[in-house]
Image: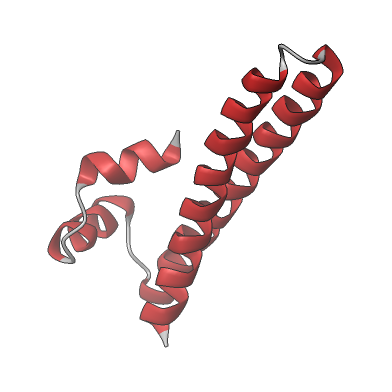
Length: 93
């Protein structure tokens, strides 16, 4: 059960992160047509980015509570699961 929830939060985070980049690039494409469309898609893309951070920190909070881990132990467990520490830090920003 815990791994299903873990991958659910992680995949939702990746989904909203990729939607952010999609809307961000599409907003720049619409800039040539209308400046109001550009700002609309740009603001929506930043909303999606904040939503992806919410899901990412939600699953981190779940792991802190579930396993009572300190942050270094959590990063070590990600390394044991095959996750790269650099990729984990890139998700935070």
